[in-house]
Structures are given as structure tokens and as C-alpha cells.
Image (tube, rainbow over all chains, first blue to last red; front, top):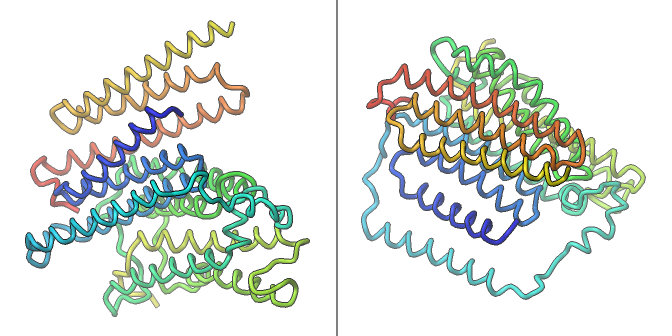
Length: 311
Length: 102
């Protein structure tokens, strides 16, 4: 890709960002944010970071976008519960934000040339993991602890969403999306797309070992397919207190933790894998994590329980 | 043969870009939701179709070509479905109250 394209892309990203901040309509800002995520994905592709681009498109644009849309819909016509911030507050916030941006810009410009890189260090022991994609090796072998904490953060976020519901609904079903019957177009999409989505997610999951892709991107697609089926009324939203659902949510962290502690006696330490079984263990962890991520993402969008639990 | 293929690519992709341009102009200039959707689906449909068609002779393998065609088909399904949904929403909600509704 050529430099004019990069410049144009940068300009578009900046304009979109400015528009999101200044636009008055809440929902318009959310749509802007989704477009912003997709543009950022293009930026990451331009920087040859395809793994990050896929994650940005799936999580930054897709999942966060849908989450914000739901929030915007739930807030309804609430226009702001307190008085708008005064001029001084807005100026201080603006100056602080501009300061952070300028400092970051200065830091980027001050980077030594060539920039320091851990690429060689990441590639060198990769043979021991049985993986071909250094990003996956970093996420699940060298820095597995970070990935473990990531899934914990996701679960905490889901608990946060759930706790927004009223006490008497705890463990019940999330509210239905619509009151009337779903539109035939939505039902059509929910019938046609999931087979494609499942195949593509499986492909992304499997290819993640050697090429850009992985469990996070795959899980986002699966969660989207599930949500589509829920929105179209083809699959009822699960009770948030259901045993199976809770088991799916903790499956990932539990498997991760179990294999991590097993590393204390069959390998060098916590979250270390024996060389011979590194790849099967990593795939096992990824599969368990995928189950939890799908459940967590889908239920975060579905929202807190708003119906009495059936007993 | 390669010259012919290149010529075909240039023509088809240019035509595709034209439809994207026309679709964008329509999206910005047309008066209401339904006509804007009409303009937008033209860009998705013909524009992307022509770009994909133009890129086909430049690919090394049949599999890569199939993937591109597949992407076009998926975009067709998604944009047709999304347009139906938006049009349904526009029909149910009159223009002025649309922003307040969930």
C-alpha cells in the first residue's frame, strides 16, 4: 500500500474520531464508533499487524459497537441525568486530552530508528510450542498469564452487566429484544448466516496456530451468530442462572488454571507446558476459552436479567 | 493474454468504483431513508460485484477466487437483510420521532 493511501486513512480516522466526539445524537456517535473500529482495522493491516486488525474489527468495531448500541437503546430518551458540565470543566477535559495526545505523538516521533523489537526473541523458541504464529505463541505460551487475566476481566465485566438488573430478577432471563414478532428479514438472516459463521469461526480458530486468527476472533463471530438467533426469536435467551451457562462461563478460566498449575510439576513452573504436549495443551486451553468467551460476549450484549427466574 | 486480463481488471474495477461513488452520492443527496437505502445497495451489489469480478483474473488460484466470490455473496445476504430491517424501521417510525425510539 502506498503512502497517499496511508495519509488518506489517517485523515479518515482523525475525522471519524472528531465526528464521534462532536456529534449530538447518541446513536449516530455509536455508528461512528463502529466505522472508526473498522478504519482502525485497516490501519493495523497497513502496519502488517493482521492479528490486531482482526481483533479490532471483531471486538473494537463489532462487539463493542453492538454493546454500545444496546446501551444507547436501553437509555432510551434519557438526555442526561445531571446538568451538562460547565465551560471550565469542558476546557480542562479538552486540555488534558490534548496534552495526552500530544505527549503520545511526541513519544512516537522520539522512537529510536530502528525501533526496539522483541520479534527475534519471540521467533527463536517458537519451535518448542509447536505453533507457527508468533502472536499466538505470545498470547498462550510466553505471556499466558496476560491472556488468563483477560478472560477474568471479561467475566468481571459480565458480572458488572448482570448486577445492573433488579435483585428479584437475579438468575432470570435477559429481556427479549422486541415486543412484536421479529421481522421476516431478521429471521431469514438468522437462518442463513449461522452455518457460514460457524464454518468461518472454526477456520479462524484452527488457522490461529499458524496464521493470523485465533480464539478471540472466532468466539466473537460465534457469539454474533448466537445473538442473531436470539434476536430473531429462533433461540430463547438462556437463564443467567442456568447451570450449563455458568459452567460454560467458567470452563475457560478453570481449564487454563488447571493446566497452569499442572505446569508446576510436569514443566518448569506455573503456566509452563512440557515441550512434547505444548500444542495439544494450547489447543485445549483455546477451545475452553472460546466456550467462555462466546458465552460472556453474547450475554453481555443480551444484558442483565429482566424476567423472573423460572424454578 | 496478460494485457487483456489487465485491461479487463482496470475496466471492471473502475466500473465498480463508479458504482460506489454513485452510491455514496445517492446516500448523501437522496431525500429519504428508502431512496438512500436503494442507492447504498447499488454500491454493495454492483460496485463490489464488479470489483470482485475485475480482481478474479489477477489471482493465482481458483480457491482465492472462490473466496472473493464468497465474500461478495455474504455481503449480498447481509446488505439485503440489513436494508430490509432498516426499511421496516423507517416504515414503522415516522421521520421526526425516529431518534427517540429504542
